Length: 190
Image (cartoon, rainbow, N blue to C red; front, side, top):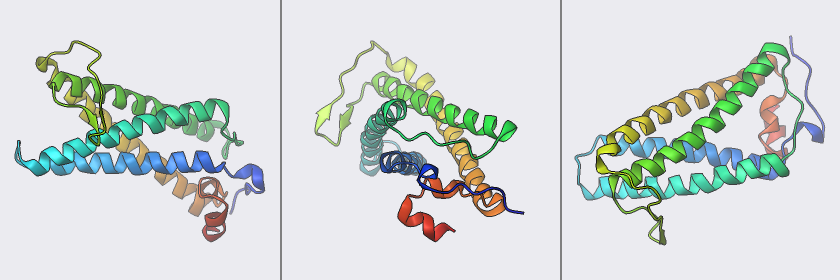
């Protein structure tokens, strides 16, 4: 039996929130895939180095997107009523906070890892990121391992987040997925 539908303009996020959400999701997937691909390549090859450079640049882009998301969420993003109540609402809120926390931790670990590696840290070759902390190459494995663990945690939690959205859409039929689809696509998701 379908649950109550969320309808009207109050049930859709604003365009900026939607764009930042999907851009974050896309960047997380691309960054994760890049890391998995280069890990299967021999060390020191030009393609591996290029993939790592792309990963660093896209990681810096993700840093800017997450900063924008946090500022937008605190100042201008549309707040919507929860789609669920009780334990489901608490779980959803916990997952959102955990994803934000993991993303911020991943960004910080990415910076620490790159600085510990002592390798160039540039954004598509346009500018370099200065080393702000005196880290040593001995610390690179520690930060690299943590960066990898957090990456897997993000992917697993984001996957569960996506499955929950699909469950809301196909099982509960409560309109939750349409909130993040935008007005034009929302009608196709009915």
